[in-house]
Image (cartoon, rainbow, N blue to C red; front, side, top):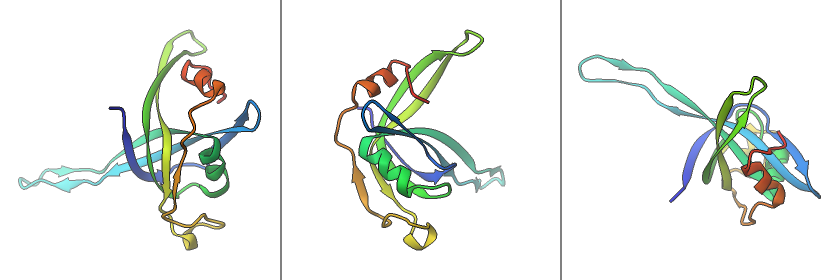
Length: 142
């Protein structure tokens, strides 16, 4: 089973583009933090922050474009996809992304201007179009 569930903070305003005929695709960076702690022997384990690349298609991308901003807290569910590409020097690079199919905005309405109601559950049931399939093969519009 390929399932990812994350709660984190948006690191920058989403990058939304349109491909094909009015098909939106959004790219979002999400930071998740595992809180540090002190072990019984006194060893301090610091906080650990990981960054995740989220990809949202169609309706979810349009919601993200309108309502999600840097600093907002999101809950997302999706699947991991890894793709490769050759950089400008010809070196093969790998990128792991979370293709989001369910999202819940956790930032309160008063915390975010023009915010969508916090806690509203949004779900994308459509399968990716040919543009999305191209994205999976490494031809991403970003």
